[in-house]
Amino acid sequence: MKKIIIGLLVFGFAFQSFAQIKTEKLSEVVISATNYKYLNKVGLENVDVDVTMLEQKVASFDLKNAEFYRDDYDTYSVDFYIPDGHILAAYDKDGNILRTVEKFKDVALPREVIESVAKEYPNWVFKKDSYLVNYHDQTGNITKKYKITLENGDKRIRIKTDAEGNFL
Image (cartoon, rainbow, N blue to C red):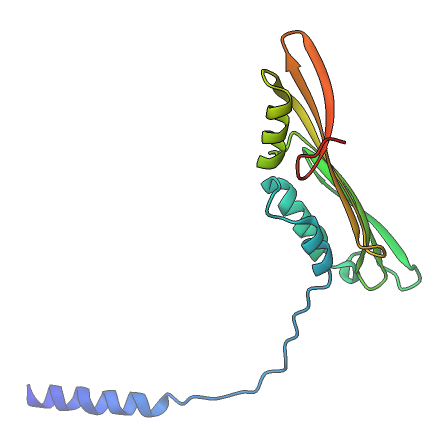
């Protein structure tokens, strides 16, 4: 029994002596958020999950590794689709977003819009809605609109609001 214990101890120490740590210096990794301005402007906190995911795809799209990329062109237009909407994005040759036109249907409306419409149009029911976004990098402008169809019995009306619930 003594020999087995001593043998295991010797084997354990010998095994550890073979395990050497090899350190290797890695090259520097640079992470850059190319289209952070776009993501900050579209404000991902108030919108439907599908819209948020598609806008993140647009912001993280790697133009330079796309099969259609050539150094010859200054701008590229790329369409992104989901079943309930799409985004048309214009990129410069470095992959920065220049502008977008976005349209989504039947999205989850922000609380401010729902409360504003419900206050102005009591007893009306939300039937359909569209979410429209236009982003321009040069001017830094972004417009967000909601087109909403309301019903009350056999009556229908269409209204437009901004993201804060102000009627347009």
